[in-house]
Image 1 (cartoon, each protein chain N blue to C red):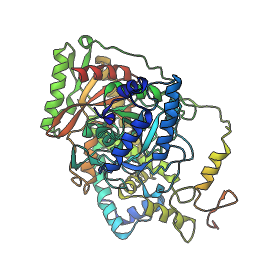
Image 2 (cartoon, rainbow over the protein chains, first blue to last red):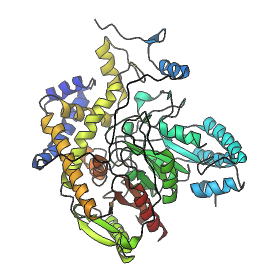
Image 3 (cartoon, one colour):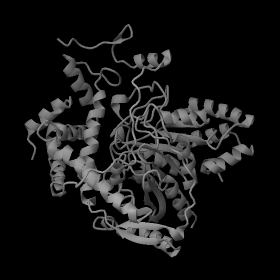
Image 4 (tube, one colour):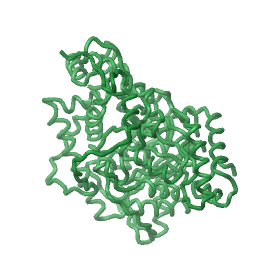
Length: 93
Length: 467
């Protein structure tokens, strides 16, 4: 069983505010799910790593691409808080 | 026959022969959507649809058009359509307007499609029943007291109830195939890399694929061919040359995984799936029992990997760049409050599980172990495909469940994905094909192929559909 403290610690890492009831429900649900994961302890170690098949991903050149000004405007329009086309955030220090 | 009952092929023929226009078709669907009470759409893009229909009619008049031109479709609300709301089924994106088109949408717009609206889904595509949507559950058109399946709930229900000619869904652990099975439509989850993911709001990036949901197999092929291929904006996409296949049933070897026909599988579902296997056998196919020994670990493996990737992917929703933003004392407080208030219970649960599995001290026991097990599952399928051409199995152990039946117990909900998650872990293509009913409720057969063998799956699917 995962402890309330652990739930709160993970919630902080995940940047999630959880109410008291949510923490309790989360403790119950996470404990049941993590118990189920114990099944994997039975699984053998894979003998060899398979060659990658079906995923032939490759890296592309790291280059900038011109996008239309209207795309930029749309992205800026969705900032919750902005000034002169920049994102505005709370003071960090 | 009503206009809204037509398949893509039939609608195309009618448009070509000038029996009706794209505007006629579009208005017929929009009229039906307005009357529907299934909660299929999160937003109806009426203005866009009518404008696209008019353009399509011009394109058709010019003679330069193809099968999708002027045919109205619905898009899962996790796929971005420029200028339209894209909520991903979440309150955190309630007012978010997509700044650009997903690559699949760009491709479809070039063909002159008509987009009727954005369909309902489990929040961030996390769920098998559609009940995790912040905008309410999508009802099953065959029984309104039951779920449509998830996460592409609205995309499946819309096609089943003739509210769109076809739709796009996305599949991370069964999210196209499961609702297709519950609603009685065809759903194709393509090979990982076959279709660009650019512009799909991500859930599990090593698992997600966009795919078609249609009235029949031929339509699934038409849509798949239109959206597949390499996209410079998605490094995991590949050059895909779809080659027509015409499988001879007599020379086919069909694998039946022993581990998939055990405890937990509804007897009626089993009977229907086995009757299709018998039919194919009678037609001359060789039926081979195969073993996928790591099957018992697949669900646990998936429910570590998918939430781990989700916890990283969903870090972008912080109340700063877009979406819901709550007031806070400092930056950390803004993050915590925006995410705490914006995300629903299941999304929070998965972020928590993923963060836990990736956190210091637990990484080896959970995430690393799950990646090892993923290798075992890959090896199982690689071995199976040395012996057989395709694998047949159920999509879901049960037909559509009652609304509310499994919401209290997350694990019981996860169990509905037991036959679908392995396909995503391995990156294989899988088709859900309606093959029978338990009472009013449709049952899907799952046809799994080797990587990039959509053509074989579709060819055999077509044969089963006709026979």
